[in-house]
Each structure stands twice: as C-alpha cells, then as structure tokens.
Amino acid sequence: MTHVVTESCIKCHDGPCLQVCPVDCFHEGLNFVVTNPYACIDCAVCVAECPGNAIYEEHDVPSDQKHFLQLNEEVAEKWPKITRSVPALPDAEKWKDLKGKLKLLD
Ligand code: SF4
Image (spheres, rainbow, N blue to C red):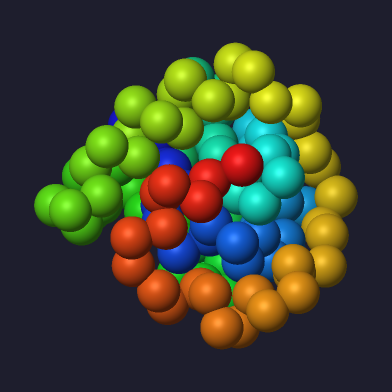
C-alpha cells in the first residue's frame, strides 16, 4: 500500500508534509507534489501535516480522484526529490478546496 497526493495540493503546494517523511519520498513540481509509491512505507505521518487534506492512503482515495494513484507513480519518476518544507504558493488558501484543477498541474 501507499499514500498519494491528490487534487487539493494543485496550486496550494503548502509543504509541511515534505519534511516529516521518514523516507524522503516526496517529489516536487512547480505547483504540486507527489509521493513515490514504491518508496512510501505507509507511516501516515504526512496526512495530518497537509493543510489541504490532500494526502490519502491508496484505498481511501475518493472515487473521483483515483487517477491520482497513477499520476503520483508516473510523475515521481520525473520530478526532483524534495525533503524540506516550502512556503505555500501565493493564493494557496483560495485554490486548495477548488475542484477541477488537474488541467492546471505544472
Ligand atoms: Fe512518507 Fe509516510 Fe507519507 Fe508515505 S505515508 S509519503 S512514508 S510520510
């Protein structure tokens, strides 16, 4: 099993989750982060750290966001690893609860 990042993170990218991962399995894009599902040890400590409630254990991912399981896996191979917390993007508060942001993923 694994934990994955879902849509709420797009254009929020508020990063306290990034520095708590004991196996450094987060990877960073311009406005989103993902986990490497092969590195994740399912400790779940990142879940409570995410201010956007964007991180789910794979079996708990909402039905309309199941595609983020594959997306985390694919993108983690391409994006650089990140292990430090980063400030939220400008307007993160405005964006974090909006739906339909996949087309804005960078
Ligand atoms: Fe890292 Fe644990 Fe979150 Fe997996 S569940 S991404 S190992 S902090």
